[in-house]
Image (cartoon, rainbow, N blue to C red):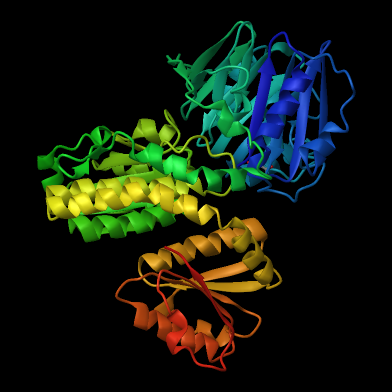
Length: 568
Ligand code: GLU
């Protein structure tokens, strides 16, 4: 799902849309497009590639004060100029942009084709434009509403029409849509990042809602046409988060943000008197904590991986059975919801569709679910009965870095709180709090080694494949490492529990497949060393990231190259 931006008001829509699309570029996309209505005519410009390539197609002056813009991440049909959004009806009167997937698109396409309509793209989105145009009897919102009653699937979408030159109609089901309220102007976006420079007064649409935006206001209804009452929120976003300062890119900036973010996460949440954590938002009194028999952590991607490490912390400190599961897997397997299980939903954006669906499933079955969320006021935060905000600041880079570490710190605090109500002593609590407070400076020290890390990355950059291995939390970290390598460098990387390597994957170890081994200073050093030697005896290069001194003490002489990166 990618980006949506829209504007109706008195300013130059072109400039606002193009700037908004640039703000959404961090999400990764394959094509971009815009549509305007001016002098009663709809015009559409779109192209495969970067926003700048689409921008180059735009006339210098468009003079429109209403328009919509999109960045697409293809799900139906290859990235191409034709498949890029906006899509229009045959007469080119209605334009639609859409994030998400329409699940009954095939049947609806066939229906449209049978009625004589020629579909020009391969997307699921185009059908919407034809259906809305056909349903329009003078009320665009009604036309969209009737269309959506026939749609199954996920959408965040925006529509403009030359027959209704004063309005944008938007809808949400499973893909975020936020309205921005200005002075005699309205904005819409899939992410506050695209509108926060213009206004901080926003309204979050909920699933099943449709809004009509005109320059002097907005109206929200549900799919059945009943009016919906909405409250306005003020986005608490520090604009600096959207400025990459002197850093080459946002990922680098956010990596460097980490020490400060961790300080922020800890601020006000450490109770030194009782050597525990203070997390009032969880709404859990000690009695409630004692009645918890199990904890289940749910998330997707890096949130799931951070949650897996969190689950280990909770289990080891609080001695409550705890595990993490991909929210997407969970929601589709008809999970058993237990009354004495505490469910924790982890999400940076608070809009992760599968995690939100898992939260709804738990609630439907009577379970209690709390959120570990970064975006304040987001759908998951609102759906949970309590939780902890990460306070990591806006995450602009696609890959999670500071949010990943902030999530770990929040889990450490939750584990400490649950642990102190149960098994953990005052002295142990004090030791843990002290260790948490030492982390920011430790990280500052590590970030000074940036050049060393960059040189190391360069040495490994020519490989096409990599393994990441570890045991226990080291395995979770290995999983995050492999995910990062894939996402950022497009190098094939796989994570395995170190002990699983010998059950098959060792067959692929060779001088051209390096292994990154995570070796913490825990009780498993000897086990990890043995695995490293197994790899090296097959001439596989190993990069060991370790807290252990002299890891190479027992290394064989003639195996694959062993490089050691010592960390505190
Ligand atoms: N399913 C639509 C398409 O393939 C929208 C994808 C998106 O979310 O960008 O065009």
